[in-house]
Length: 155
Image (cartoon, rainbow, N blue to C red; front, top):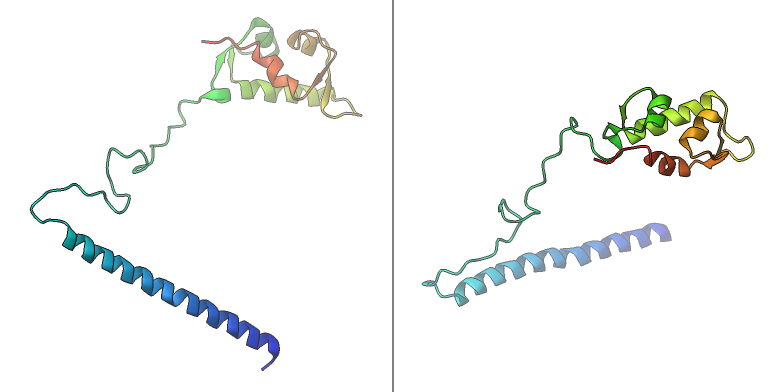
């Protein structure tokens, strides 16, 4: 046998030696605690006991998972809301979600090649985008959502 195989054999044997007492001691200690707890409690009194595992108790919030929402009611940036007249002229619809609006702005930017070739995270606005973005000549891609949010009416 080589020295590396002997070393690996020692490691495996050591792991088995460490895990074996742990398993047997934990099961033995559980058996001892259940026997001692049953002997120490008087049998005549009805004392409520806490369940040992997470069973189906309706009062615990962790006991049952919340039902998933249906996909029929979008929320957040996926919820369609009324838009301003300026955004309505740009998108062509009176209600849109924020996600749809951002997608269509980016599609317009790519179609008309309005990204700054040096700094690809900047948009060089034409007249149509200037009306959306408060007359700015250049807009960073992180500003697009912020500037578009002003065009959505809050309910």
